[in-house]
Amino acid sequence: MKIATWNVNSVKARLDSVLTWMKQAEPDVAGFQEIKCVDDAFPRFEFEAMGYKVETHGQKTYNGVALLSKHPIEDVTRGLPGFADEQARYIEALIAPKGKAAVRVVCLYLPNGNPAPGDKYDYKLAWMEALQARVRQLLKWEERLVVMGDYNVIPAAEDVHDPAAWAKDALFLPQSRAAWRRLVHLGLTDAVRACNRQPHQYTFWDYQGGAWPKNNGIRIDHILLSPQAADRLEEAGIDRHVRGWDKASDHVPVWCRLKG
DNA sequence: ATGCCGCCAACATGGCGA
Image 1: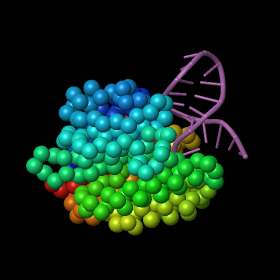
Image 2: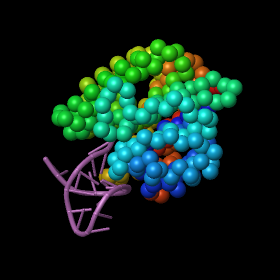
Image 3: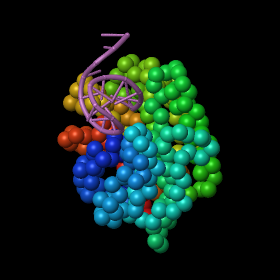
Image 4: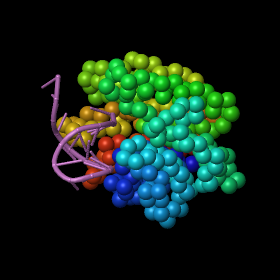
């Protein structure tokens, strides 16, 4: 089963690119972040015509997440459990293929947190604490679990072109990275890192300052796997070529393939 | 120290992103 995550930066503005990528990449499951529309405005017909079922947790103008699947989607949860959130940043569901093992999938858009310190950074750290609590609960079920999305966290210096330039940014502050480690250390596997130990495997390049042609990127979009999912991991990758397309999102798709 | 670029709502330009 191929499972992918992509911060599309407006599904309406990006529709042609997203459909093109979906046809080429053919993921069984895709999680989108920053759809930037309410549920009724999501272009679901275009995806349903390609054989996908669609579940959204949308919001006007900002944020918004969606899960698409070629297999039945069950047990949908909208919003991070245990966290009263004004912003649409979390959707979770069970992907249940006929006659095959199910996979529980979380699609998340973690708060940016800038400027730090401040209210926005406090919100980010509180969100990460609530996510950790939710994942601890999910891990008790011992399922194949995929927790993926735009984490807005640069895990390590090897994941950023210029660590010094990002030292005081909410994405790279020690507190953010410590919260990331606490999450991973619950027993999750970073799918891309497990398959590729090379440094500088970026998933985001800013629109500004020629970041893409200079390869001034950061790795902030991640797929984390429970032990039961990690045992099935065949390959994982980053579709960096998509960043070069016309009217590209500033993020690119990240994917993994699980056996069975 | 700030803007760069792009999207949104809305119609001018400010909020937001990372």
